[in-house]
Length: 105
Image (tube, rainbow, N blue to C red; front, top):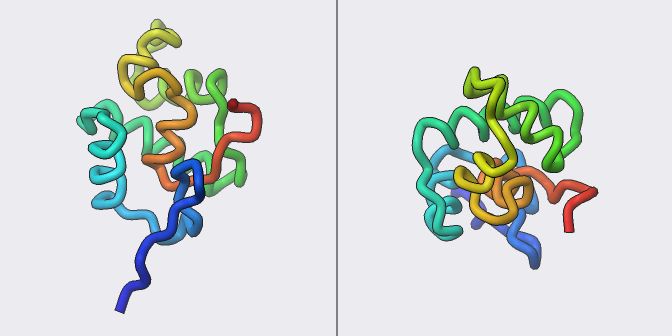
């Protein structure tokens, strides 16, 4: 039987290995974020980055990852806000099931 998923007090998955697409979809909905193809690609890129580096990307790194994931060199910080609402790095990490980025408030 699967253990219930635990979140930290600020909404991050306590055990990133428990992450699933179903979790991501539900978490995005809870945050009021439409979880469409663009968000799925960015979240997948962020999860891969975290798995390789154990670093949760803050805004600047998230923007670079999103540009590559979406094949759009013109993507801006405003675009990230449109994808993940007012705190994109925090919300993306919440959906991706990774720890809170260290440099985000």
